Amino acid sequence: MSEYVIGLDGGGTKTKVLVADRNKEILESFLAGAINYNGSEKERIDRNMQTIFQTILEKGYANKDCIGICIGTAGISNPLVHQYIKSNIDLFGYSCPVSIVGDHETALVGALLQSEGMILIAGTGSICYGRDEKGNSYRTGGYGHLIDDEGSGYAIGRDILSAVVRAYDKRCEATVLTKLVLDYLNIQTIEELIRYVYDPGHSKKDIAKLSVLIEKAYRLQDQAAIAIVDHCVSELMELTKPILKVMKEDCSIAVSGSILLKNQDIFDKLCAGMKKEHPLVTITKPKKDAAFGAVIIAAGLGGTI
Image 1: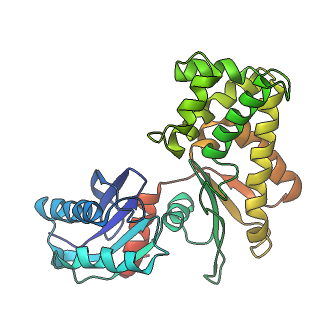
Image 2 (image 1 turned 90 degrees about the horizontal axis):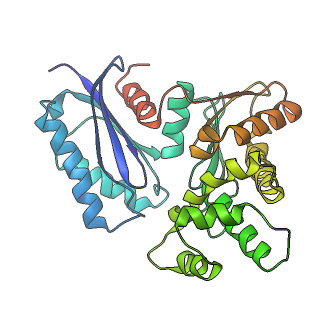
Protein backbone atom coordinates (compact mmCIF):
# COMPACT_ATOMS: atom_id res chain seq x y z
CA MET A 1 0.00 0.00 0.00
CA SER A 2 1.33 3.44 -0.94
CA GLU A 3 1.52 6.48 1.34
CA TYR A 4 -1.74 8.09 2.41
CA VAL A 5 -3.25 10.77 4.67
CA ILE A 6 -6.35 10.86 6.87
CA GLY A 7 -8.75 13.79 7.22
CA LEU A 8 -11.60 13.92 9.76
CA ASP A 9 -14.43 16.45 10.03
CA GLY A 10 -16.13 15.98 13.39
CA GLY A 11 -19.65 17.40 13.34
CA GLY A 12 -22.23 17.50 16.12
CA THR A 13 -23.73 14.09 15.37
CA LYS A 14 -21.36 12.42 12.92
CA THR A 15 -17.82 12.45 11.58
CA LYS A 16 -16.85 12.40 7.91
CA VAL A 17 -13.66 10.42 7.34
CA LEU A 18 -11.53 10.70 4.21
CA VAL A 19 -8.46 8.68 3.26
CA ALA A 20 -6.46 10.19 0.39
CA ASP A 21 -3.15 9.67 -1.36
CA ARG A 22 -0.39 12.24 -0.96
CA ASN A 23 -1.77 14.09 -4.01
CA LYS A 24 -5.11 14.46 -2.20
CA GLU A 25 -6.98 12.02 -4.45
CA ILE A 26 -9.70 10.43 -2.31
CA LEU A 27 -9.28 6.70 -1.75
CA GLU A 28 -11.94 6.08 0.92
CA SER A 29 -14.86 8.01 2.38
CA PHE A 30 -17.16 6.95 5.21
CA LEU A 31 -19.22 8.32 8.10
CA ALA A 32 -18.69 7.55 11.77
CA GLY A 33 -19.97 8.71 15.15
CA ALA A 34 -19.33 12.13 16.66
CA ILE A 35 -15.87 12.95 18.07
CA ASN A 36 -16.63 16.15 20.01
CA TYR A 37 -15.55 15.42 23.57
CA ASN A 38 -17.45 18.47 24.82
CA GLY A 39 -20.68 17.12 23.36
CA SER A 40 -20.87 13.65 24.93
CA GLU A 41 -19.30 11.40 27.53
CA LYS A 42 -15.62 10.54 27.05
CA GLU A 43 -16.13 6.77 26.83
CA ARG A 44 -18.55 7.12 23.92
CA ILE A 45 -16.27 9.46 21.99
CA ASP A 46 -13.28 7.19 22.67
CA ARG A 47 -15.23 4.30 21.12
CA ASN A 48 -16.11 6.38 18.07
CA MET A 49 -12.47 7.43 17.61
CA GLN A 50 -11.24 3.87 17.92
CA THR A 51 -13.86 2.61 15.47
CA ILE A 52 -12.65 5.13 12.89
CA PHE A 53 -9.01 4.03 13.00
CA GLN A 54 -9.88 0.35 13.30
CA THR A 55 -12.03 0.69 10.16
CA ILE A 56 -9.19 2.35 8.25
CA LEU A 57 -6.80 -0.45 9.20
CA GLU A 58 -9.39 -3.09 8.28
CA LYS A 59 -9.71 -1.51 4.84
CA GLY A 60 -6.06 -2.35 4.26
CA TYR A 61 -4.33 0.93 5.06
CA ALA A 62 -1.26 0.11 7.16
CA ASN A 63 -0.40 2.57 9.92
CA LYS A 64 3.23 2.73 8.76
CA ASP A 65 2.13 4.13 5.38
CA CYS A 66 0.22 7.08 6.85
CA ILE A 67 2.17 10.34 6.43
CA GLY A 68 -0.27 12.76 8.08
CA ILE A 69 -3.51 12.95 10.06
CA CYS A 70 -5.67 16.05 10.51
CA ILE A 71 -8.68 16.10 12.77
CA GLY A 72 -11.02 19.08 12.68
CA THR A 73 -13.63 19.19 15.43
CA ALA A 74 -15.30 21.47 17.93
CA GLY A 75 -14.18 21.71 21.54
CA ILE A 76 -10.42 21.72 21.00
CA SER A 77 -9.93 24.76 23.25
CA ASN A 78 -10.08 22.23 26.08
CA PRO A 79 -6.44 21.06 26.37
CA LEU A 80 -7.56 17.61 27.54
CA VAL A 81 -9.23 17.03 24.16
CA HIS A 82 -5.86 17.02 22.38
CA GLN A 83 -4.63 14.43 24.85
CA TYR A 84 -7.71 12.24 24.42
CA ILE A 85 -7.54 12.31 20.61
CA LYS A 86 -3.80 11.66 20.48
CA SER A 87 -4.11 8.75 22.93
CA ASN A 88 -6.70 7.06 20.70
CA ILE A 89 -4.52 7.50 17.62
CA ASP A 90 -1.51 6.09 19.49
CA LEU A 91 -3.49 2.95 20.32
CA PHE A 92 -3.30 1.99 16.65
CA GLY A 93 0.41 2.54 16.21
CA TYR A 94 0.44 5.65 14.03
CA SER A 95 3.74 7.51 14.18
CA CYS A 96 3.05 10.21 11.57
CA PRO A 97 2.49 13.92 12.34
CA VAL A 98 -0.99 14.73 13.70
CA SER A 99 -2.75 18.10 13.51
CA ILE A 100 -5.79 18.71 15.74
CA VAL A 101 -7.60 21.92 14.80
CA GLY A 102 -10.99 23.59 15.13
CA ASP A 103 -13.59 22.59 12.57
CA HIS A 104 -13.74 26.23 11.43
CA GLU A 105 -10.10 25.94 10.34
CA THR A 106 -10.66 22.83 8.22
CA ALA A 107 -13.82 24.44 6.84
CA LEU A 108 -11.79 27.49 5.71
CA VAL A 109 -9.12 25.41 4.00
CA GLY A 110 -11.71 23.20 2.30
CA ALA A 111 -13.84 26.13 1.21
CA LEU A 112 -11.02 28.16 -0.37
CA LEU A 113 -8.50 25.33 -1.02
CA GLN A 114 -5.94 27.46 0.80
CA SER A 115 -5.28 28.56 4.37
CA GLU A 116 -5.45 32.32 3.72
CA GLY A 117 -8.84 34.03 3.72
CA MET A 118 -12.02 34.04 5.78
CA ILE A 119 -15.01 31.80 6.37
CA LEU A 120 -18.37 32.86 7.76
CA ILE A 121 -20.38 29.94 9.10
CA ALA A 122 -24.07 30.13 10.01
CA GLY A 123 -25.65 26.78 10.79
CA THR A 124 -27.14 25.85 14.15
CA GLY A 125 -24.54 28.27 15.56
CA SER A 126 -22.43 31.01 13.99
CA ILE A 127 -18.75 31.90 13.83
CA CYS A 128 -16.31 33.81 11.60
CA TYR A 129 -12.69 32.74 11.19
CA GLY A 130 -9.83 34.20 9.20
CA ARG A 131 -6.16 33.65 8.53
CA ASP A 132 -3.92 36.29 6.95
CA GLU A 133 -0.93 35.92 4.61
CA LYS A 134 1.44 35.76 7.61
CA GLY A 135 -0.42 32.83 9.14
CA ASN A 136 -2.03 34.85 11.93
CA SER A 137 -5.54 33.61 12.76
CA TYR A 138 -8.56 35.55 13.99
CA ARG A 139 -11.98 34.51 15.26
CA THR A 140 -15.26 36.19 16.14
CA GLY A 141 -18.37 34.57 17.59
CA GLY A 142 -19.04 30.91 18.17
CA TYR A 143 -19.54 31.20 21.93
CA GLY A 144 -22.73 29.19 22.11
CA HIS A 145 -26.47 29.80 21.97
CA LEU A 146 -26.88 31.06 25.55
CA ILE A 147 -24.69 34.14 25.07
CA ASP A 148 -23.90 34.35 21.34
CA ASP A 149 -24.55 32.65 17.97
CA GLU A 150 -26.38 35.65 16.48
CA GLY A 151 -27.34 35.19 12.82
CA SER A 152 -27.48 31.42 13.28
CA GLY A 153 -30.28 28.93 12.76
CA TYR A 154 -30.86 28.87 16.50
CA ALA A 155 -31.08 32.67 16.65
CA ILE A 156 -33.57 32.75 13.77
CA GLY A 157 -35.66 29.99 15.37
CA ARG A 158 -35.63 31.81 18.71
CA ASP A 159 -36.65 35.08 17.04
CA ILE A 160 -39.45 33.33 15.16
CA LEU A 161 -40.81 31.96 18.45
CA SER A 162 -40.48 35.38 20.05
CA ALA A 163 -42.45 36.97 17.20
CA VAL A 164 -45.18 34.35 17.57
CA VAL A 165 -45.71 34.87 21.31
CA ARG A 166 -45.47 38.66 20.98
CA ALA A 167 -48.16 38.57 18.29
CA TYR A 168 -50.27 36.29 20.49
CA ASP A 169 -50.08 38.88 23.29
CA LYS A 170 -50.83 41.65 20.77
CA ARG A 171 -47.51 43.31 21.60
CA CYS A 172 -46.98 43.45 17.84
CA GLU A 173 -48.92 42.81 14.64
CA ALA A 174 -50.17 39.36 13.70
CA THR A 175 -47.63 37.30 11.74
CA VAL A 176 -47.93 34.40 9.32
CA LEU A 177 -45.14 32.80 11.33
CA THR A 178 -47.76 31.74 13.89
CA LYS A 179 -49.56 29.40 11.50
CA LEU A 180 -46.29 28.24 9.94
CA VAL A 181 -44.86 27.26 13.34
CA LEU A 182 -48.01 25.55 14.62
CA ASP A 183 -48.41 23.59 11.38
CA TYR A 184 -44.72 22.64 11.30
CA LEU A 185 -44.88 21.26 14.84
CA ASN A 186 -48.34 19.75 14.28
CA ILE A 187 -49.82 21.53 17.29
CA GLN A 188 -52.85 23.78 17.75
CA THR A 189 -52.24 26.28 20.53
CA ILE A 190 -49.66 28.64 22.00
CA GLU A 191 -49.84 26.65 25.24
CA GLU A 192 -48.68 23.56 23.35
CA LEU A 193 -45.92 25.62 21.75
CA ILE A 194 -44.62 26.72 25.15
CA ARG A 195 -44.59 23.12 26.36
CA TYR A 196 -42.65 22.14 23.24
CA VAL A 197 -40.04 24.87 23.70
CA TYR A 198 -39.37 24.06 27.35
CA ASP A 199 -39.58 20.28 27.06
CA PRO A 200 -36.24 18.96 28.41
CA GLY A 201 -36.22 16.46 25.55
CA HIS A 202 -35.89 19.26 23.01
CA SER A 203 -32.56 20.94 22.32
CA LYS A 204 -31.18 24.02 20.59
CA LYS A 205 -31.20 21.99 17.36
CA ASP A 206 -34.98 21.66 17.56
CA ILE A 207 -35.26 25.44 17.86
CA ALA A 208 -32.79 25.90 14.99
CA LYS A 209 -34.89 23.66 12.73
CA LEU A 210 -37.65 26.28 12.82
CA SER A 211 -35.38 28.61 10.83
CA VAL A 212 -36.52 26.90 7.61
CA LEU A 213 -39.86 28.70 8.02
CA ILE A 214 -38.39 32.18 7.65
CA GLU A 215 -37.98 31.95 3.86
CA LYS A 216 -41.69 31.47 3.13
CA ALA A 217 -42.76 34.17 5.58
CA TYR A 218 -40.17 36.58 4.19
CA ARG A 219 -41.35 36.05 0.63
CA LEU A 220 -44.92 36.71 1.79
CA GLN A 221 -43.62 40.13 2.93
CA ASP A 222 -44.45 39.38 6.55
CA GLN A 223 -43.10 42.26 8.61
CA ALA A 224 -41.87 40.10 11.48
CA ALA A 225 -40.02 37.84 9.06
CA ILE A 226 -38.45 40.80 7.26
CA ALA A 227 -37.21 42.16 10.58
CA ILE A 228 -35.74 38.77 11.53
CA VAL A 229 -33.92 38.40 8.20
CA ASP A 230 -32.58 41.96 8.37
CA HIS A 231 -31.34 41.37 11.92
CA CYS A 232 -29.72 38.07 10.90
CA VAL A 233 -27.82 39.67 8.02
CA SER A 234 -26.76 42.61 10.19
CA GLU A 235 -25.39 40.29 12.88
CA LEU A 236 -23.50 38.15 10.35
CA MET A 237 -21.92 41.25 8.86
CA GLU A 238 -20.91 42.36 12.37
CA LEU A 239 -19.07 39.03 12.79
CA THR A 240 -16.88 39.81 9.78
CA LYS A 241 -15.96 43.40 10.65
CA PRO A 242 -13.22 42.88 13.29
CA ILE A 243 -11.46 40.35 11.06
CA LEU A 244 -11.79 42.40 7.89
CA LYS A 245 -9.91 45.21 9.64
CA VAL A 246 -6.75 43.08 9.74
CA MET A 247 -7.12 41.26 6.41
CA LYS A 248 -6.22 42.41 2.91
CA GLU A 249 -9.01 44.57 1.53
CA ASP A 250 -9.49 42.20 -1.42
CA CYS A 251 -9.68 39.02 0.64
CA SER A 252 -12.06 36.16 -0.09
CA ILE A 253 -14.84 35.16 2.32
CA ALA A 254 -16.35 31.72 1.95
CA VAL A 255 -19.81 31.24 3.44
CA SER A 256 -20.96 27.97 4.93
CA GLY A 257 -23.76 26.48 6.99
CA SER A 258 -27.43 25.93 6.16
CA ILE A 259 -28.51 29.53 6.79
CA LEU A 260 -26.16 30.93 4.15
CA LEU A 261 -26.19 28.00 1.71
CA LYS A 262 -29.91 27.16 1.73
CA ASN A 263 -31.60 30.52 2.27
CA GLN A 264 -31.09 32.52 -0.92
CA ASP A 265 -32.66 35.68 0.51
CA ILE A 266 -30.20 35.86 3.40
CA PHE A 267 -27.28 35.03 1.12
CA ASP A 268 -28.29 37.72 -1.40
CA LYS A 269 -28.79 40.38 1.28
CA LEU A 270 -25.44 39.53 2.84
CA CYS A 271 -23.68 39.81 -0.53
CA ALA A 272 -25.36 43.16 -1.23
CA GLY A 273 -24.42 44.51 2.19
CA MET A 274 -20.82 43.34 1.91
CA LYS A 275 -20.45 44.79 -1.59
CA LYS A 276 -21.66 48.15 -0.31
CA GLU A 277 -19.34 48.26 2.72
CA HIS A 278 -16.38 46.25 1.36
CA PRO A 279 -16.47 46.47 -2.45
CA LEU A 280 -13.20 44.60 -3.00
CA VAL A 281 -14.14 41.58 -0.89
CA THR A 282 -15.20 38.44 -2.75
CA ILE A 283 -18.01 36.29 -1.32
CA THR A 284 -17.89 32.67 -2.43
CA LYS A 285 -19.56 29.37 -1.64
CA PRO A 286 -17.30 26.48 -0.53
CA LYS A 287 -15.24 24.72 -3.19
CA LYS A 288 -14.86 21.64 -0.98
CA ASP A 289 -16.01 20.60 2.48
CA ALA A 290 -14.24 20.62 5.84
CA ALA A 291 -13.23 16.96 5.56
CA PHE A 292 -11.31 17.77 2.37
CA GLY A 293 -9.82 20.75 4.18
CA ALA A 294 -8.52 18.26 6.76
CA VAL A 295 -7.01 16.21 3.93
CA ILE A 296 -5.18 19.30 2.59
CA ILE A 297 -3.76 20.05 6.04
CA ALA A 298 -2.79 16.40 6.56
CA ALA A 299 -1.05 16.30 3.18
CA GLY A 300 0.93 19.38 4.19
CA LEU A 301 2.13 17.54 7.28
CA GLY A 302 3.52 14.87 4.99
CA GLY A 303 5.43 17.40 2.90
CA THR A 304 2.89 17.74 0.08
CA ILE A 305 1.37 21.13 -0.75
